[in-house]
Length: 435
Image (cartoon, one colour):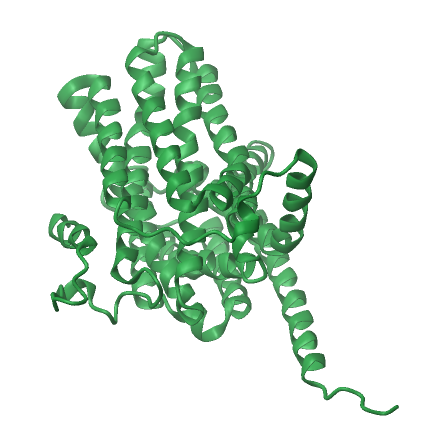
């Protein structure tokens, strides 16, 4: 892994003229577009930020309990406020990126997040921890919004699905590596070690970002806008991204349910929580499946189109959720996790492409910021209805409800597909030349 990162970081050198080629980053593997091999630096940036988040978040409850004297309610409040700030800031971050430029805005957000995580070193109260968590949450919002818009803006149109698939691998690597790194830092230097390690990762992400050229902003995007004009722009962008946004909210509500209640659900079905064939290992199967699917079928969205890919993914997602609802052995749960990975892997690129294809380039950051809010909101809602249904009926009912929501998303995609087909059909009709 370290060798791959070193080779990736070395791509800031303009080696197209000197003929240096690295076997793991050939031109065939790199998505076509304006960035070239510097595309991989964006992957490194998103990975480093995801690792920092994955390192800090799991140990935050322990910090609040042992250092600040907070209970479970206080822990939930601090973490949820940070998530809400991140969710609410995505449209604003996207708008600032359209005005200031992607690179400048992302670097500023990383600096703000770094100050936020360092604030934990002197956080002696719950309000200070809340402020720290909120500032740190802005980094996640910024990288999710800006890097997605950056990839779409600088990748050839017929290669965007593959580019978004490869870019998204960094998030899954971060989720896998982050908790282990956080625990190692804690064992070495207690909580201060965690916060300093996260700050160092954010600093490295700025270094990785430095050689990447930001897409140019159209002059009209940089003008100063009034509050009414900005709201009008957000409304216009909302109309464009609403349909894929709703589908993404329905889909990612399943992810919120899985992340929150999968282990509890599988335990209730007779599967042990830990061990090689325990419920926790299902998450490992899921993560490996997503990464494998993105490497194996990363270009499927470009071949089939975003609408068809979304439809197939939603069907697979519904099937996987039904299997999880009835799973009473590790084998069935693991099979469901594999299907789940192959469902989610192309779904994010497909929905992102649907959300961005009708956005003006100068408004792409704003639109994808709003789209990201739908996704984040869906994750939160999934945890909410999962808790309600698990308490009132059963965890199996919660997973079946999530499967039903994917069918609702499928209906939306089918209707959108038919409308698109009619639009293309009418557009191809010859004009009426009769006087």
